[in-house]
Length: 99
Image (cartoon, rainbow, N blue to C red; front, side):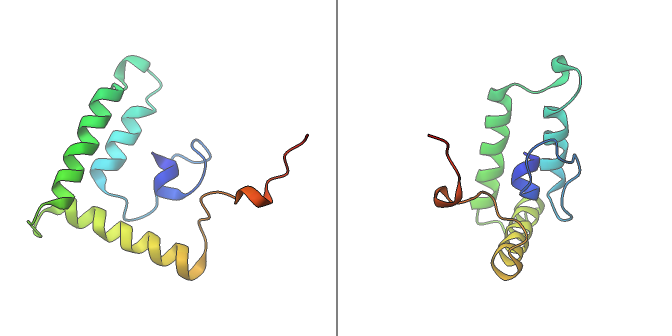
């Protein structure tokens, strides 16, 4: 989840870019809890992401979670397209694959 927020591989850093929704940060931190028993199940994470998606798609523009996700989405698009600071991956053409 940190990789989606920062554009860097997981565990390179455990902080999140400013503007990452609080609910997302809390869930991501639970997912990397040192105690595996405290980590949420994949089913729970899927359910939670589904709830966020429903809120984002809802017509309620006063929804705080919706506002947070849409704001960071706009921010990341500007960073990626204007400054190209967060390339998510190399294109397949630039990867040197040994034969």
